[in-house]
Image (cartoon, rainbow, N blue to C red):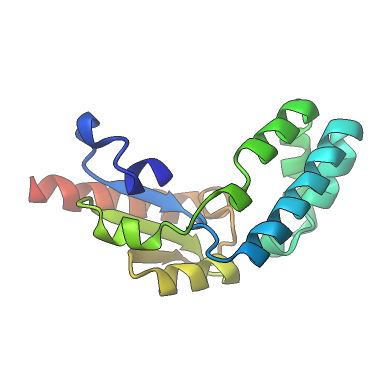
Length: 168
C-alpha cells in the first residue's frame, strides 16, 4: 500500500491494488507512540519467549476476536516454526508507528484500488468505510478473511481483476 501511495511502483505498470485489512497509517503522535510501545512489547516477547506461548497470546488480541479456539490453535501450530527473533525484527521495522497516514495519497493515486475486509473485523471495516476507497466486505469473516472465507475472498479477487481487464 505504501509503495503504491508513494508512487514507488509507477514504472512497473501496476494495473490495480487489492488490500486485505490493511491499516492506512496513524495521523497523530500519541497514537504513534502508543503503537510503538505496543510493538516493542510484542517484539521483546517474540525475541525472548517460546514462540508457541507468544502466538497463543498474539491470537487473543481484539483484532482476532472472530476466531474460535480451533482456528486460533491452527494458526499457532501453523506459525510455530517461525523464528521469534526474525518476527521481532519485522515488527520493529514495519511498525505502524513509523507510517504516516496514506489515505489521501491512495485516494489520489491513479490506480484502481479495492479494499477487502471481514464483516466481523470491526476495526478494519470502519477504516474501510472512512477511507473513501472502493471496498468490499467478506461475509462471516474476521481479520483473516482469506483464510476464514477463501471462496468468497477469491470471488472478490476475480471480480476486481475481471473489471480491470474489461477496462483495458
